[in-house]
Length: 286
Image (cartoon, rainbow, N blue to C red; front, side, top):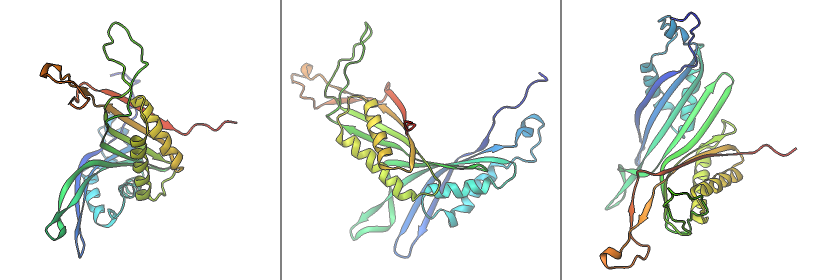
């Protein structure tokens, strides 16, 4: 073994902690369905180099803490719940940073013969809300986000002007079908935010801009959506977006004796284009 070897950056934690909380109100119930991850960074080098576990907080303890905090602290946004957990873990002197990631899986109330059911639900497939709270002795940082948000434009989407070589077969188009599954996260400038209002505002902006603009490419769409989110939400510093281009190829109807009217497509998921970018606030001009 080399005498100059040393342990580099490291972290550990518990992932995929499944938590379902039933809020039993007098008139109706509500369901909170989360997947939580906890990651710790700090003074853990001895556990690697000296087989010394005296400072290692067991990952099973992390899992149990998430469950134990849920009755009292999972009463509002997932951002707030993540901050409470992060602040707890960083109280241990050996922990320099605690990062809590949360995905909330939606459930919607079923409607029966007499109206909305008080205690029956179905899983909502609209999107998954996400949050990441990072707590250290130097401060706190929170990112909110959304994943699995599937959207489509059936017109007002183009892709042209790209370079061509002998391997290029894709035709230029000024009117195509654009579909994608949005994954987006946005970083807040502060950790004291009305999380519910902020999330609703960002999601509404993203969807509004996607619906209204004429897209020249997925890159163009990311820029317009990200810039609008920053313009309308001064408490957000940057927006990261990951948009796969879920291709829909127009079916040639000629072999079936018909003419294509731009109505019938084959939907594909693989292979797909993948476009990622960060839109952030620039440095003000001097």
